Image 1: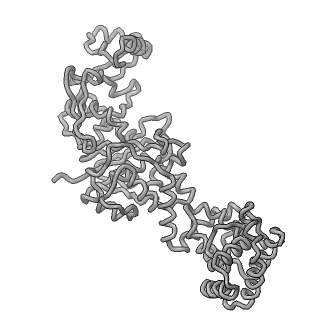
Image 2: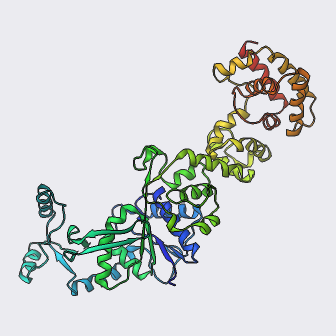
Image 3: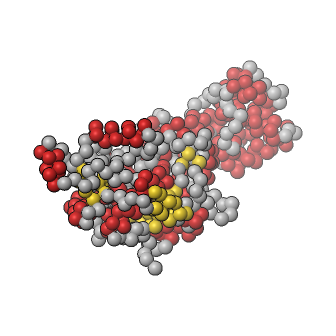
Length: 487
């Protein structure tokens, strides 16, 4: 059996977006599932928009996600170079082959002439395409165009009256009519190859066995198959995965949330959670389980469970899944991740040497169970500072105006001052003793204490919060809360 060799080949014209990251992940999973090779190369022929800073962003994002490549840029391999602008001599060699075989020709049409042709086709209700006016130029005609200073592009001569079949591993057999394709450009007038030409040369020479990419590339595939046929090269197997849509059914965009991997990293999402979430965008395992490690995804992944219909990007599901991963991650790791956010919000000193790490870890251990992303910790940490709280709305104020509250607060203050040590287990027992002595249900005790200590009706468990706040702060908070409530 042929070794599975797949590639992720981004253009460095912007950061790694969610759609690209999912394509990279699916390629990676297929390679690892079959002990194959995952290759990363860079398609940088768009010289105006390409930049090394974007290449660095893409590669760093892949590494952060855990998608290490076996071959390609920064890693090397026997099929390099792995940047297209370093492969121009290779493309020229194959361009010459197509010219010599009569499967390609030089086209001297101006942009104005081409636009006039497109307008005529539109007016007749036909698909705009190139009709081959330079297909059969004489030597004299070419010399005249050259004398006029026209710089030619090179077009591929599309055979007429043929059906081009794409046997897609996700979508099944898809048929295209060659007459609707038109002779397309393979080399621009500056000598730079177009995407459709360069990609097939790269895939062939790098022995790519499977091409997994977004369905927006399906319309490119008949052109690529024709080029493979003209060069006598066996094409790879294609798998076109669905679009990613927002919950409103429109194409994924900034209004649905962050669109780049780097933005999710900056917001405090864990790479394991984002990988897990991306895998479920258009692919589904058997059973109901939704949480998978990367190793589990490798074991379970198969293209026959990739859906044809669009995937829906549900930020609420990502937040839920990320929260699950945060809760299962070592608290010290979450504390380290939290530091930049807490420094920015002023909750921690800028000098890391001045941070009380023991106190920070205790605080984070309380917050950890309530975070959807690590950046949320700044709002949560406001509960840990100050000796006064601000009551959050009328609902909180009404809780403190219940008739049993003064008794609850008085007994709480007394017992807290006598408590030693002030730890989670001790606080649990103390709170239980208050309910027994006052013969009150838990809600009549715990809710007023929560509001008095935090100003909120919802929040962390009191037995986690109280040891972190400390005795003195707790007493001052409950006293100030009663004053605010008018008790």
